[in-house]
Amino acid sequence: MQPPTTHPQVPAGLPPKIAAEVSKVLSRRNLLGTLGVTAAGGALTMVSYKDEAQATTTHQGTAMSHGTTAPKEPTAPKHAWCMVIDLRTCDGCRGCTMSCQQRHGLREEQTWIKVYSMEDSSGGTFPMPRPCMMCEDPPCLKVCPVGATIRTDEGLVLVDTDTCVGSRACMAACPYEARYFNWTEPLPAKRMVMSNTPQMPVAKKGTVGKCVLCADRLPQGELPACVSGCPMGVLYIGDLVTDIAVNGVGKTVVLSEFLRDNDAVRYKEELGTNPRVYYILGHGQKLGGQA
Image: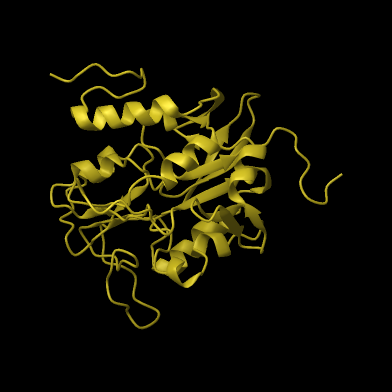
């Protein structure tokens, strides 16, 4: 019998150990409330960055595979990747989507980073890019029957397309609709085909693809394609360990201050997935250079 949980937002039906861990994380978070902004049935929820960063950077380094956690020596990861999306400057141009598609050879209908049209509390709309949320507790990881979904110790959720059998269980489990089934053969490569890795996957018919945050670029200090391809500087790649984030127009910020001072929120956080994508909605702050 599953022991009673101490937090009301813990999803029902989780294994006891997972439920206990989720309860601990949710209990120490300082949730400031839920904003009246919805799309696809979800909400954007305010978070306390200080609590979140402390929980992330003090967590033991683990590599997750085949739906289980492999124990290691208690060492902190060198990086904890995340993304910040400043909606105050997004005009919905889809430059992020097109840059991603070009780099990964995706077809037009395959949008690893999709730009939604969101409705605000006044009845208006605004654009909202949605990459993979790189969840700390990804539901897709638990349901893959062959262990093709993995999570690195730096927080990247990836897919091994050499292992994937196309069951699409991960697609059904993802509450963000951030995965795509490869119904057809990939587009012809425009350059020499790279070795297929989870960090830089080569699309295969009958497998599932998703945003990988350009994981092959990060160790080289390079920006993901969506970040460098955004002409408005909306997207930032951030590191919870070094507490730095940078966008595609060269702006560098102290991550914790940027999120705290601008009331960062996360999408559908009430589901307990602990996404590592933060959104800035804005509450009347003056942007740089504006009167």
